[in-house]
Length: 134
Image (cartoon, rainbow, N blue to C red; front, side):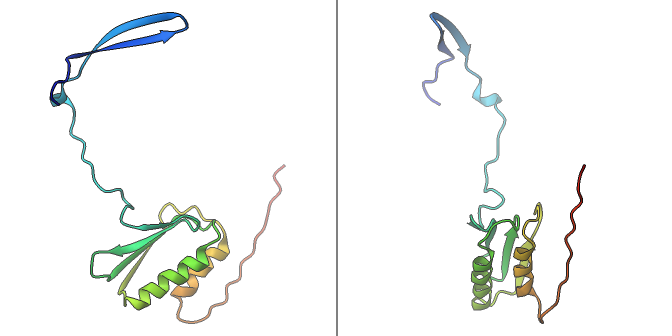
């Protein structure tokens, strides 16, 4: 930086009292180098209401990443339909489903995803039980 002073004058006011301080500027050469790059998911398109990020890795459209952060929201059916229609259209060879840090949510939303991954119809039975905490 050109023309930068060696120190800065800082005046603070609290109630009726004004305080003046001089602060020495840091040497820019001593600051650590911080790499700035893309965020982990910056290449993926985000669906706000469905808590899903998706996108192709590479320009050849052979690898598709579907990151499902949770199954809590309500727009999953529409997003899944759009994603899998796009996969068929582009003849995508590999699908990566990223469920890391997925906290769960509505079981029906997870079944909507599984429907697209199965070759034949399946029957799933589950039981929900609640315990009283007293």
